[in-house]
Image (cartoon, rainbow over all chains, first blue to last red; front, side, top):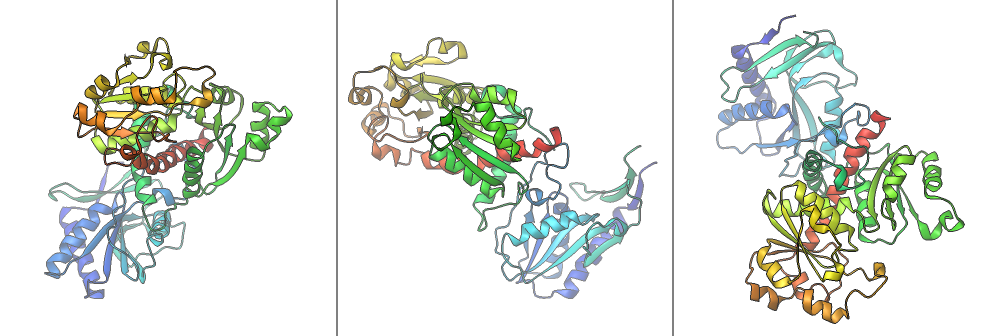
Length: 181
Length: 312
């Protein structure tokens, strides 16, 4: 099977815009809000959402951190290779904050579960929401649902969805492919 | 995704430079973890680790135990003085009995060189060497190199001096292997009686004059005189040793090294290998070494335990 483009550059840009506006619709005060991207693939999305929001809320500071969930995963010792962790960078307290977790593709829900566990080790947020670019809604293994969704994609299990970001944002896209090609 | 090239950590000699880099990279993450308000992650929650110490230890045992607990592993401790070893049980039998109680990983210190290698051949679990006689002490070498890397960056071409009782020191041997694998140049300095024969074959130059050696090096790792391992008198008196091979401020000023880094694997004999004021000075990274010890041991245990189940 050839790669299939789910969202091309233009469509992805519109989606990012919409996601930023949806967040803005729910949260007008950004002083108690923190965006936390899940390592590694939530980083690029988080950066772009926060950049969009900064143009909407001029002058307001937006807190944005990254969280690595490797040590909280539930498949340790259940895969052939040991997962190498990425860095966690949370230089603010999340105690009492409204937190929006960001990841690119919501699949089984296990990464988000690990993310919640990791997050709670840094304090007790007031509430936590989930923002994802792609929701593969029929693949869930845990009861996790996003609050903000870029696009819902219904594909079979062995097909993979990948979000590709280019450094200069000139050709970002979301593609669908299978492993056996 | 990656895996260490070995199932055990028996010595630095048996691991590759890539393994060392991977351990350091993982240790960076654990260092961040142990500086959080909640210093614990659940990675090893279904892993049981036995700390088997046939020889006394404070720092290493505590450091391993903290590393294990911060990874959420279950820990059992065992020391030879209160065990059936005294009743004549062999090492392999002792460990197999412990493993029969479903232990996944063994951390062992033993007074005999090669005890861990022997054990690794006969039991079916990952073994971490926490010091075997005068042979190797791999986690100490890793944490020493990690602390230096933190201070100096890349160790390639750095000049590192190991001073003192090289003959009885497992720290020296592991450090030599580790630092050389990372591209550093290592020399040793001490009384001729405490320098092992043929050490030059490891690519290590011997210097007998501490002042000249200090003028050469970027880092001085001061080893403790291991009186408990010395069966004969290797030097006349401690006072004389201290005069010849002890590090003090006057000597340092004479050599004129302002950016020298002083290390010590502990426990320090203040006033013998190093004076008290230098051990507590800005030159010293002794307490950084101890802090990094926990992070490095967490990395080693995490990488070995992650492998344990998949390879069995």
